[in-house]
Amino acid sequence: MFQNKEIKETLLQQETPLYYYDLPLLERTLDAAKQAADKRNFHIHYALKANFNDRILNIIQSKGYGADCVSGGEVEKSIAVGFPAGQITFAGVGKSDKEIILALKHRIFAFNVESIQELEVINELAGQIGEKANVSLRINPNVDAHTHHYITTGLDENKFGVPNSELEKAAAIIKNCPNINLIGLHFHIGSQITDLNVFKSLCVKVNEWKNFFEERGTYIKVINVGGGLGVDYKNPDENPIPDFEAYFDIFDKFLERTGQHEVHFELGRALVAQCGSLVSKVLYTKSGLKKNFLILDAGMTELMRPALYQAYHKIEKIGEVSPTDKVLNYDVVGPICESSDCFGKEVELPVSKRGDLIAIRTAGAYGEVMASNYNLRNEIRNYFKEN
Ligand code: LLP
Image (cartoon, rainbow, N blue to C red):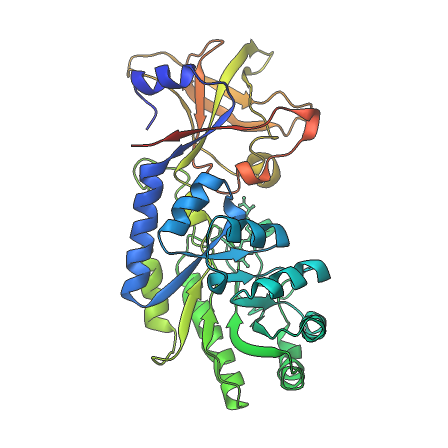
């Protein structure tokens, strides 16, 4: 994507660091996911937490996606960019009273509720303002997502969802909550899941819990299986679009549903990761006693994933590269006063100099949104590739 002279010259004119977004790739990804979902009558709510850049949201909204929000701020943002309130869900273990009231007033599609106490609070607040809340109950299915432990969410030891042992009680309480309308069940077991078999195990649990509620006389209209589909961080050019057909096929085959059940997904990463890269300039090159360092003008303040999860992101030199160029192994680091401020160790790159441009790939999801103000660094810029 970045190995040509034109892109280098264009980007040399921009102030760095910046988040580069390839909008045609974003559109192709969104179209592929939407077509695969529509074919099976599945609905996708885009998880705003992965990227809430206005330009990106406008495109996602224009393609007919719903929005999955985890804060009052995200609910307001999705309304502002035009997502219909009837296609907005609100999830999260710690919704404040103010956020719940905001969402009730907007009459969003549903709250994904994570505890019995939260059910009671929503019931009470809805009663106070004369609204009725649609809720989906988030169930912790105890399925191992086989991903990084920081982004696994569906195990008994995780804080998310209502534990199995409390579901009987939750079902009874809901029947006594006049301002709550139970429409569905919600599950989300983790993120960056690349082993699709995990989703088969999820379907088995979903079927069990749907039957549990239906046997108790509560009809489950919406089955929300969350997000989590992973992307190929190693080969962004070879596999720029995740295999949505294979992913949705699993749910099509293994979820028990009749024509009346709606199946909802909350994809974030799989839709936006690949179209984004962090573009940075080499400030200094330095040979330590044991290492060669490339010191960039971007750091963990712009992209936190490597420091936080030891996440791999492919690092490339921008511009023409010839197979005969000499290469060196570099530790690619940022300017922040922390040793974890490192994008990659022993990265083989063509010999680089001050002023060269570097792309850190597959940074469209959980990149710009997780940036921080640490070290009082400048605001992040954007460059949008239009066609
Ligand atoms: N639904 C729920 C309830 C979630 O908690 C998440 C992500 C999603 C949907 C979207 O999942 P996705 O399709 O993007 O995997 N910052 C981490 C990822 C945290 C994911 C949190 N929840 C990272 O950089 O890898």
